Length: 178
Length: 263
View: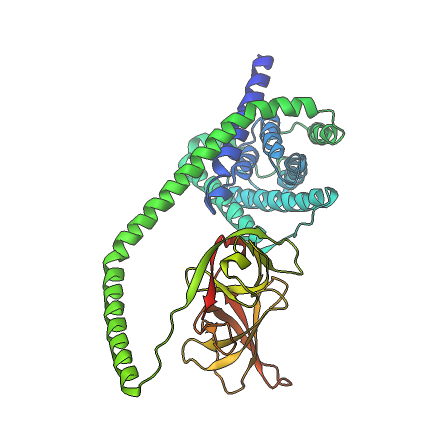
């Protein structure tokens, strides 16, 4: 069963990565900025899914990284930093059940994901001998679009699937049960 | 995600960093190549289809827009043609009244661009016409749309070199199309742009004004388009105004030109 699950995670991740690189990234702006990864990460945090989902996300960002101009590792390290930071923040601060809690989590994920990506892409370009403008106006707009979309999508999901959401989400405000 | 403990979380993060490190040291190269073999074809398929769909959508929108504005465009064109015919007839009558000498038509020859420079210090084109076709130094080169391209600076038997107007050594006397007032000299700047200098202080140059050639030199005809003013400025310590000119053509995309053999 575990082997089947691992296969599903691996090939599902590759298929989702292919979908992102071949379909979403080839759309024109702003559609190309659809925040698939931030949305998946936000939902993973909000719904408190199994940690196995982490490997699914890792497979997706690895496939996307293979097609990045800036280089492999940007998405993987961004995911690592993001999971660490957001998990630390979520444990003590936000409720997963309230609408505002979900929106704040999505906004945090959107901002941290984009900033990590931009900084790591710039660093990777520098290591590979290319110059890259960090924090350009284009990046700022892309970050805004992605963050807002992430929050809207998670907010809409919260509004439309309340029962399922409440069953999955923790009932207490803090992870320590206070 | 619901990590059981902080230690558990650290293991996951360490796993992610380990994968990045293994890639960095080349351990994963063969595996990554296999994934790319799997992923390349569907991604290329998706990407090609999306690009095609996007192209078709834009084409459809352009067609719709063209269909919407076509009647208006045809009406404007007919109006302009009528006005031009009337003005030409009036002009011919006035010339006859004044016994003004007939204006000669330009004698031109077409040429193909066979080479371009990549040197930022020189902006030149090489064309497939030369001395055998009547090409000589200082003759003027323009595109079919009546836009000035540059000047012949050397001619061999079957080819010639054209200095573009955005070359740093290019100087062209110009007029403002709106009032035909002589308004300065357009200079090139290392292929980076055009600058209109020596604009008389009393001249009013505004953003969007079209700049055309002046016929003060022996070979230069009057009225070839150079571009539009995009920024106008004057420093208090300078006696003349200056402006930045946006060229009417993309110099990197010139493939065919015409040369004026006789003005």
